[in-house]
Length: 98
Picture 1 (cartoon, helix red, strand yellow):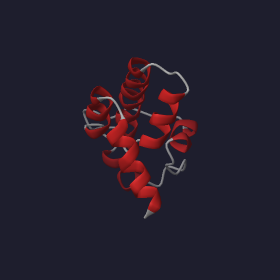
Picture 2 (cartoon, rainbow, N blue to C red; picture 1 turned 60 degrees about the horizontal axis):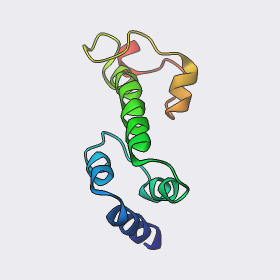
Picture 3 (cartoon, helix red, strand yellow; picture 1 turned 120 degrees about the vertical axis):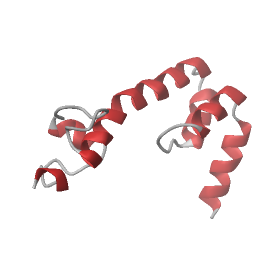
Picture 4 (cartoon, one colour; picture 1 turned 45 degrees about the vertical axis):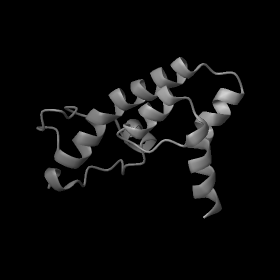
């Protein structure tokens, strides 16, 4: 419970443009980590760019895993290291591959 309260407190303390990006992000981002990066001197614009870049790279991989390579938004193939990086099984036992 304490961790969740810390996340909300950190989120509330972020600049409005970062709160908007985190609230509308396709994936969970650690608000405490973002707040710590700001405290260490990272620019909010740089953090926003990094979040958007990661989501741009991750969405086709997620669509590949969930829907298969024939889905319009999915990558045609994904290397095993990217699957492991985003915590997916590297083996090809997905429902659409059977």
